[in-house]
Length: 216
Image (cartoon, rainbow, N blue to C red; front, side, top):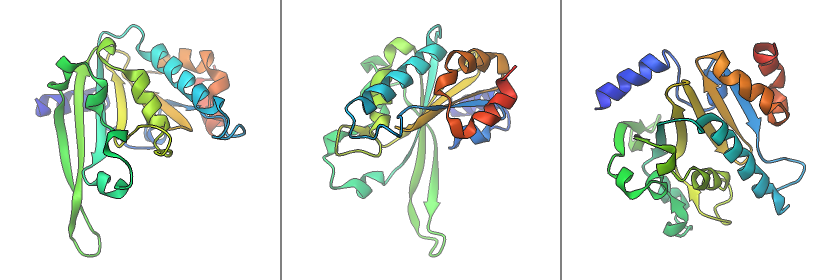
């Protein structure tokens, strides 16, 4: 199964790296601003707005999708770095899937992580994936939890990096934290509509680069 999945991934996104920052690893991509900096995290509307934007963008990509592939990457010893946080505040992918889909989650890879100086094994970077329908997935809950990645004292958060893959349009959706998210792909026409429809949400820092590609 892993061999078939790897083959599909390589054929769908040839020579592309599924690494962050995703926007800079793909020739075609959009970078959106979620949390508005000038409001500040103490503004009660800060998290509400970023969740609304993230959900709107997700639904714009996956609204008509029959299937979605969800991939996660996590460091196996991550919990040791957050021992001061209650375990029930730490969420993983399985918490957001319908029960019948949980058993379909598969290990994609486990890469050992060694200390550069001592060559001591520090842990493993594990990736998992699952195929499901959008209806089987609490995507709003996942996006909300990602938004709290840097604010674990506020609400439950994810220890995993999450990538949503739309197979027909060949699009990858990745929200990196409360600040923003990347939507990348292999076909310009699949992203062009998003560029025009959500232009006001594009991250100003990378706007010139996006305008050069999509501003036609």
